[in-house]
Length: 273
Ligand code: GTP
Ligand code: MG
Image 1 (tube, helix red, strand yellow):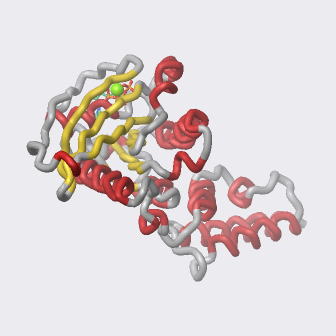
Image 2 (image 1 turned 90 degrees about the vertical axis):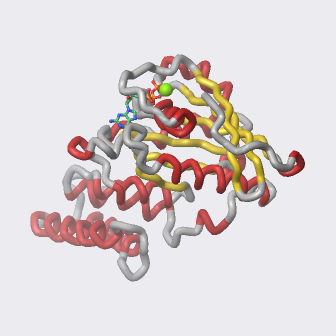
């Protein structure tokens, strides 16, 4: 990777940070980094073998930031190589392909793998996460929409950007926000600034909306077993209604999720004696 930043101005103010990229194989992690550092796109897939390392310098306000980028391989085969590199990161790029639902669903297990290596949630709280919904140029094959991706990211206090390494869309904005947040965090004594994590809704609300969107039938939507009693259906309904009622929940998609839950309950109760 080549450097693309202005010359050092003030030695005292320079900062050294470590960032890593995570996500399933072939989602575009290396291409996103290449697009930013080298301003080019390679259409041929060249799988990262274990880890790629690069350095770039950027200017954030009056500080020069030296960024060490560890670009991880997404293939499960490289777990033993990857797990050495999680520690001491200040920033994580979490990437998925908007045309592959499994790459979006896998974000939770990527966080899980990282948390296991970091040892505790407290260590995860002093890291800036940016979610990249990548390959947005391939509009026809898109299966994960913006609302769903943004909800997953923002409910966890993570940034969300729609990106295309191919066209360059969103790449510079994403990296600018990423490095600026990491600088804020370092200046804030290593804690993610609070404003970033208060989005007005809880992770439970966001996760419930996502689960409802992905449910396969009305039983599944209410979280009860097929053949459940009226009482069980009503109990599950009440719990969801409290969580998602539009007067109480401002998470994107809560209104649709609430309506879907009302409809699911109505249709189930019709058929239960
Ligand atoms: P691993 O190193 O195996 O973990 O994969 P990776 O996530 O680094 O994927 P990589 O960047 O190598 O890209 C995988 C394939 O997707 C390549 O063929 C890229 O050309 C293609 N690709 C990456 N980003 C984009 C994008 O934004 N749009 C399109 N159309 N293709 C992309
Ligand atoms: Mg790669």
